[in-house]
Length: 182
Image (tube, rainbow, N blue to C red; front, side, top):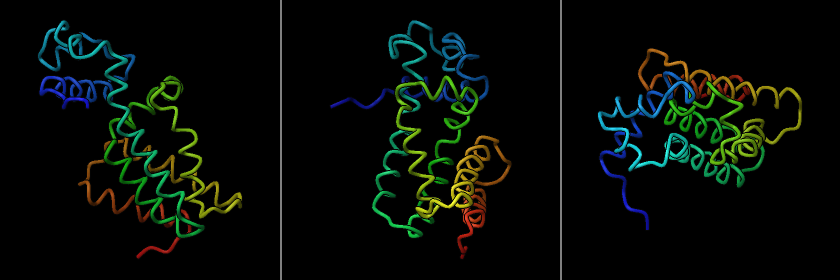
């Protein structure tokens, strides 16, 4: 059983997350992370084999979250999948907004990262659920608009509180999909 991360390990991850989101993965060095985390580069390398190992650890939770959402949505038929797909996706995107920003900043390189191998299939299945399992071109296009729109919005650091942003994203996505909102 893996041991819980040390406080220093968590601090290094948090520092790297913010630097990667601000400067990109390629634009951030191990030395930058060590300075931000207030540790030596040797200490950083004691905790992580390198920058890619840090990225892998940062991207694993969102990838696992997307896989779990995919499994939940697979059990739902037709239009019953739309609202859970919207609320689940918005929740994931908001929870991992910095990770989304990192992925979008260097999309081609990020999608080839092994931990993100689940994304293409998971996004296809999310789009299917968002479209209410419809094969109609309009429904498929609207589903892709929601996927892209939510991701870009959470990565944009909009100046509003989390609850308001979540509500607006869910309602906007449901409207885009032509699904009634409460």
